[in-house]
Length: 86
Image (cartoon, rainbow, N blue to C red; front, side):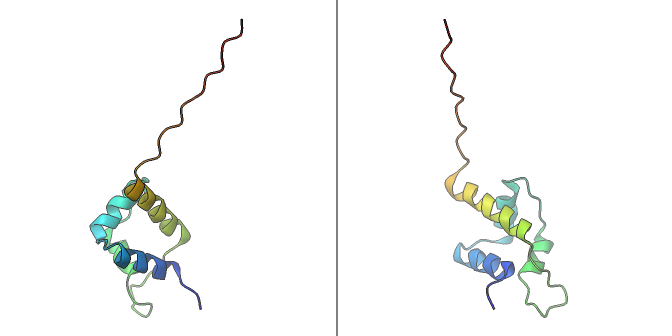
């Protein structure tokens, strides 16, 4: 069986040495609110009664926030004005 979203989330957390506070702040960068208790449910073992499966939306928002956290916000595109016709 392949990796689940929970496995990916756990591996990124360990590899980047992130704490729950860090993950909450990273998710906030993309206006996604998540609590520490919700995060704890994702990092539990599958047979634990309070285990919760990490959905695609949660992982996607974390990854998008992680990009901003590591690279910084995307620069705004400048609107190119067409030259005025005479």
